[in-house]
Length: 254
Figure 1 (cartoon, rainbow, N blue to C red):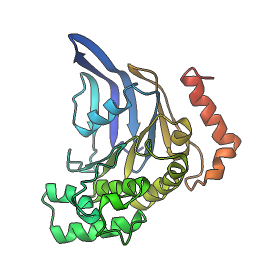
Figure 2: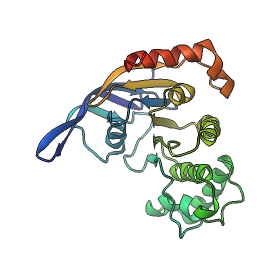
Figure 3: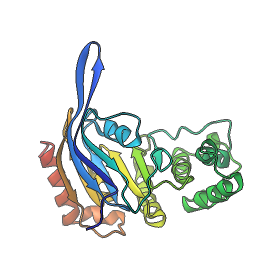
């Protein structure tokens, strides 16, 4: 079996708030293979974002083991991580192309290559022709597409996505779910996708991690055995419904 790109074992994180300890993550264990799209689902405040911050190197774990990279990947912390947040966080004074190339500028990558790659990525996410536009000229869904392109521009090995479609209306969110699967297949990246939508977690994930209400504990971590090429009609199938019901049960909502 291949060595995983990510391995978390009994990971724990505690914050000190108002003179008291707050356990954000109590016990998270999971392995992620290179090229997987893993969804992390659970109620608000259960520690999902904390797990992403630990993987991004923004926080250290207080206990357990965190291993990112393997002999084949040559993983470089910081350089090989891209992040997408709930808000697109595009700089309003920069064009879309300039926003997408920002990580490459920060890392000091060759300017011409970065701009060429940014144009390619904007085409991949369906934004060809928007290079000279400014964020206010794009819809919310289009801004999030630009944010995904920005996360990919420096060719990271790991993409961390923190509720990236949570602020979108329901119909736009459905379209972005379809786009997310297409982008994942075309980019071949390893993606961890945080959501509190159970249906979104099942629809997107090759594997699904279910975290209980804070402090986060891994209730289950299992493969989603559905076709990789998924249309919205898959949500009407018994197989899809069984996964949704399984997660409801793990969260005590059945």
